[in-house]
Length: 142
Image (cartoon, rainbow, N blue to C red; front, side, top):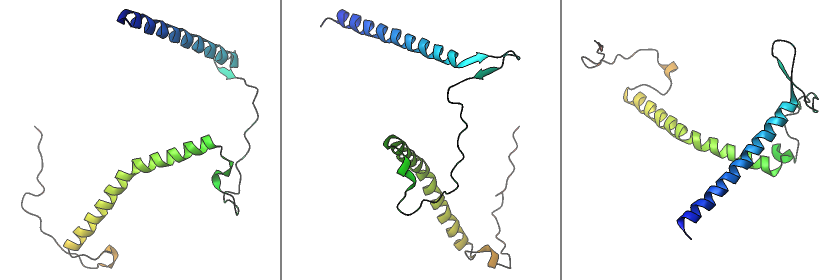
């Protein structure tokens, strides 16, 4: 196939998709405007829909009964989203959890090196540790 013909075909397909997108956006904007009407008071907008019923109150029984799981009422699509979200959050928090565990280990090691017990409340006497000369130097930014 000639490169010019390929460019012409791709351009025509692109133009068609752009027209469809413009039509879709115009249709969506028309639907949005149909749901809203302008009020008389200082440019406030009110949205009117057919489903104006108040949402029902949440169930007070938050503990599932025997044989009932929390996700029994979820459709497969929603279950998939929930599983993905849980896995995503677990993966994002894993480096933080590893860092916290490493820092806790370092703190325990420092406590051991300083000769303290694992619990600070048991210690009634204070140990004084001398710092090297110049340890706390002030930095003067001029």
